[in-house]
Image: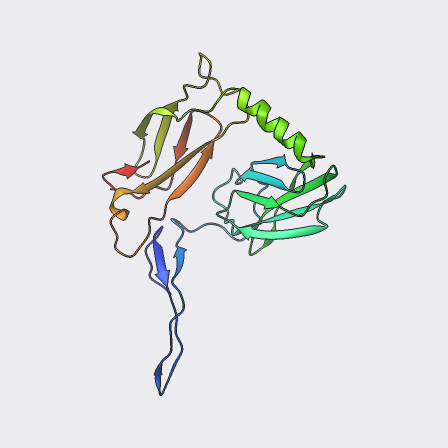
Length: 232
């Protein structure tokens, strides 16, 4: 399928046909073209970050993509094992930013690896060591401690400053922080955005894009030029 628009979500389905006619179609499948052509002649760089949170029998990991956004990332290879990495592996889509490793043994040390990948193969890994919880009571106590701690608030005062035809700077305020507005813990902010003219397309769900930030501002690049409004 050639001559498609850049950065657009398409709905695709397929059916077999012969001299007797056309058979039943498959379900609709969504696919989004990239906003620009990326370099796939070299391996991806290592992911920007990796955070692991353990339960008694599972570990949920979240991560950020490589800092170099000019190299294609088609997926992420997640590896894990008791004491050593990569005993088990799972390949997830390049758009994912989280994954839950299940059916683990309580109170064991696991080593987790994460690599960005493309057609060249896997890039440089990053690692995280984490021990699963011993009992469900320990998890409940941890949740109780978190509940008594500071609560996250919905960011306010969102502002967008256009700095070029394809770039914008976003900034906001977090009222749950102390005075001075300095982020000192592990909280992250997720920005979801889409051109306004996509919101009314019939039979097509909005193809939202996401970007994470650990600060109170972020630069969004590769926006669609000459778009009057953007919904953040």
